[in-house]
Image 1 (cartoon, rainbow, N blue to C red):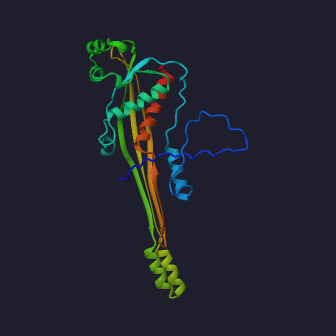
Image 2: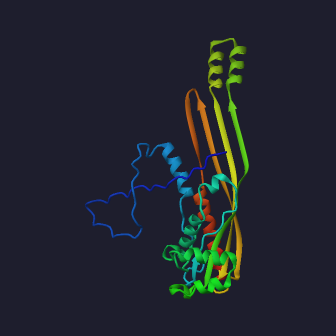
Image 3: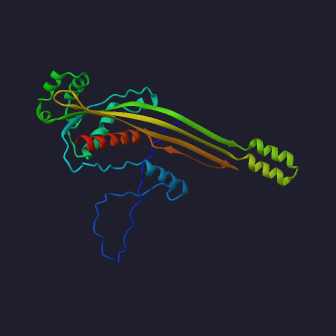
Length: 273
């Protein structure tokens, strides 16, 4: 199985201004950091950074972010996939963390799970079982009284659906050229061709997420939806006369889950706020 690689993002440090000119006005762009890697600026660094930039976190401009959303609690959902690569990395709380982050970005009033203490387990159990009496009893405590929605995100699918590999090994052709040519130049050409080796491999995953919104007072379902995204990971390697080049990467599982949450929250924000 192809290894999944999650790559970090680096930014170039800002350039210092001309000392003879007045200092520029401060900006609100946030801090920037230099790249201390010894390979910074090289072709390998540029390619790796380009791949990292494509996979880096990007904020979503939610359609109705200017409108205040109802108070809600995100409870841990379920991971129903049996894929070991996924279940070993993720727990329901990881996905709920992404949910709290994005719902807050969309201007919903989120009561964070960390502030609920032991009540979180009671709330989760009551709404997963549809226990109306227990739900109403639990939601009468403190800040919980103003809660309108209970939201959960479930992973229903996480599977590698396709894989493809191809390669070239010039040893056989190089040997044939060298033996048939009968000349020194032909033998040299055969050695060059024989040293060529290329390998490419690509794997495609499908990851599906369901979101569910429940009425905080009745446990009844308000809305639900399902979102599915495709993830591609790959690797390539080329070697000629002892000179090699390789690359591997793609969007990692963490990034895919966060993008699925963003897609689900965008729909919640645009349809149900």
